[in-house]
Length: 301
Image (tube, rainbow, N blue to C red):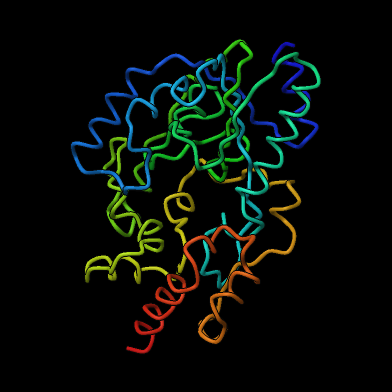
């Protein structure tokens, strides 16, 4: 099986941004991760064991290659939205895992003894680094991976497997370094050198369970978002004139706004029933309600 046949099958699923990353340990990434740890630029959601973040063989001993896929989700602008664009459609964890499973089923039927492990946002490896290594996109100063066709509005999923697909090469590109993302970041989380302090990121703060400080509340209420943040992507020149997704689950039955009255009036159980298949539901009703209340308090002042 060559990787062209694999990519043809992925294209039949609507996945155009697919590449192969090697299983070699990236020493440069190791330096980056250690620097972030020493600077305290971590959220606590990352894999604790550094070796597992670097080396896929800690996760799958017989790993020979990593299939990396980008899932575009941009559907256009929605007026009065208070949710990040990645939340509009069905939960990307569900959508991406379903597609990755179809890829694995295809490979199982064509490769004897094919073994694999699927990850979407829940794996130990640094997925954006994998996307870069696989030639899917290049880094923006805002830390996002930028693809040529879909900009940075993509989710990343990967398959660690025991088949030695020939790896792709990183793109010889970088963002234009205009600095708009740094200028407009409400929490000044972006440091301008392709590094960031995630604890000051508005998206992180909308999901933080611990009590927010006055400074964090100020950052959170600087925009209308109650979950996630798109500002650094919305101002990015690389996201102008990009293609919209054609993945049905991201286009159909969209939700781009939640109202305080509704969330306040329903139980936790009802919240899960209504929104359990949405990416914004994972932190539960109370975090959403808190954020809505903070914005309501600000508007009432």
